[in-house]
Image (cartoon, rainbow, N blue to C red):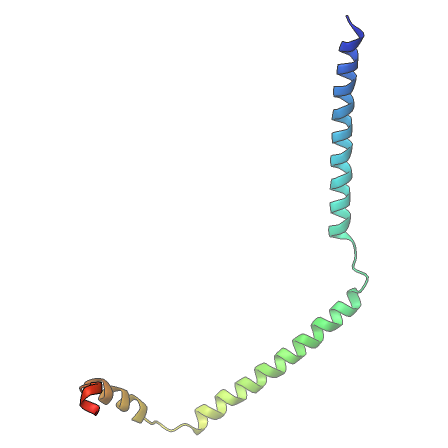
Length: 98
């Protein structure tokens, strides 16, 4: 056997080892980024709690607005009657309006 054959096999095995080690290194790096604790977990939690409190306040205000509108509204069908009467009446053409 020629020495060139052994160099090819050694190069092939060395390439496979480098690829496998590179894959393991990349996989470990991705895992550590995904599971790394954030430095500002407490700050992030506080920010989310403040946003939640503001959202709850806005929701309460909207609920009050809706309840006020429902309680102050009397059964009024004029808007519905207007739409019905408008759709039943013939439309004016621009020439007839002049």
